[in-house]
Length: 378
View (cartoon, rainbow, N blue to C red):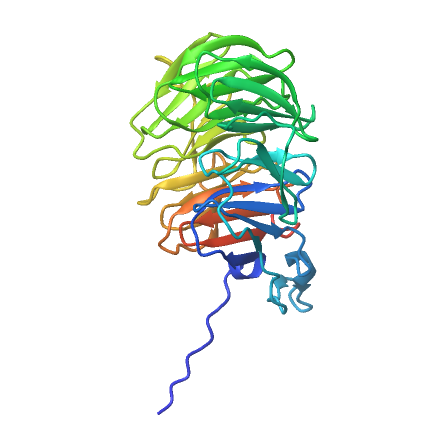
């Protein structure tokens, strides 16, 4: 007797997301400034490029049922264009790329002593005007049209157009990570267990702090009072610029791969525990003061590997070691399932600047862009 199995129901993720198989773990994701393209840094050093523009966007596939008035999204009818992937490993995975102008990115090449750039369509070219040295960290200053680049212990400001060096500063330690304040007035440069704060206007060294552990993520608070770092040794380091002092929050269950500030939620959020960890701004824990903790989402049995604060809403994307991706309202238990778990960890999450697109990458070699319909969060 023939048994007929019902077709598998499509999930929300199937309807709103585009997914490409790149067959290699994804170590980093970066939207360009215009939001027209997404670059993925693969674990083997190759770069993958996909267009953000979607001929069958979820909004174009939304239908309103005549009898109930309920919206629904019809499935896609056309195959996705394939990603553009460089043939050879060309990008250093230990140096995060940064935005370059409106459309491109700048990255450190695996075999060259000058910086390279990539266009939105995946063309890669050397920035021949850049200093001939091995870059150890990069960050963009788009308002000034500059790139902050570290070459071991030298911090340089380079022009976006061509990479010519405008000024430089020798720091008392090497630099492997740079964070730029929202108004671009301050640069935080971490390396060798220390972090130096530098004025971007004149590259004047303001102060250097001890910063224990290996920093995995480094962020400024919107008010520039706080500089926070997620560390591999299961701790968050905080620098209180007003007090000129440094402290650590220790004993997380896992390494803090990502943290960030939510302007809409007025909070700091971090990964590394069995739920999203957070505190309300400006009252962060420091010294004997416990701060004002906030609870986001629901606690579970799986470690939160990655978090990404929405650029304009009181929301954050949460990626788990099981491959599960949730959308949470900061400071509330509300959760929305974005992607079901695959058994493979999430390694990268990134929002587009307008908050319409969430890029997702993991160890399973799948690259996704989830595009949320405009009426989803009304």
